[in-house]
Length: 463
Image 1: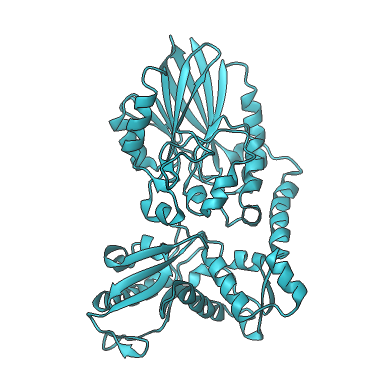
Image 2: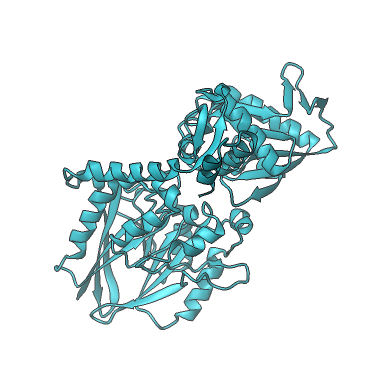
């Protein structure tokens, strides 16, 4: 008999507050001599640019910390693949000590990214051949504008399985596709023994078996670490026992708090060194002023007269005086992109009616996911749009909407994804504008409208 121990994480999202405990747990488990082999995998979304250290280092701090976790293989999530500009992802793994397994992403010329392989076959000390295939969520609508070609899961699986036919004894998938798609993979590819999954933030405390295949996932943010026991006979799996260990149950050390705070402080320091603009007094602790200038910013960026934004995006108001990249990151931590949506007048009218219908409901609605890093959705604000709610008349640029005319409005990918405004997703001709985040779009606009006064301040901003 042969025994394996498989450790795994997913959707860490730069929650560095758990990293000291996770690091110690992995180190101890990786030294386990009661089993024949220990492997460690991560299933993507290990970085999140809402943390100042990740944002300041463009994920390099995450790579350095992950090197200390001694992963045997990882795949990427949408936070690596979509939230980073193409060129950042191209160099993200330059200093990684682990392979990136990713079968369904290509460059625009259809070549494999230089930092990834579609599959990897590893051999245990007892000569069992384990094939690893990595998959990430297939979002062509957002990968395309970021100059990537993402492949559908079935296409990628068929291609990889053809390449590794008769070359493996055990098949493990490392996926960032969500539990629903993991179940689909298990049902359609019965040769899969184990799926180490992520993306949907499901906590499968003791795994889930779908026909022949075990699916595992540890929730989110490093709240749990996956720990799987595998038994084999004659190089084939006979038993898989998934488990998850709460990070809260792991022992804490006296220096942990200082280490965790140090990650944040370093990111804050690095971002604070970059000055963006010098704002007048009207911005001091006035969230509405921040919303209004940001409406101008996204409209200017998308080259539209109309725009919409929600107040819940602004976790803090701006301030008067010198505004830094840290201030912007703290106010707008979301990995969101501007969208230019083209709508017929009749559809724009319907969109505005959807906003007005949901206005009071959304004001205090607690929202999670879909790139949102705040707490509540908040109030919707318009640029260039006015509404007579009693008469149900919508005005664009001072004129009543013409039902047959085409209008362009600046919004966010977030509003295309949330279910509250279906008109945008169903009939909008939506152009996703990459690579700048919302906060970068706003920062560039503020720098133009409220420039830094001294030459030294301008040089600081360009560093």
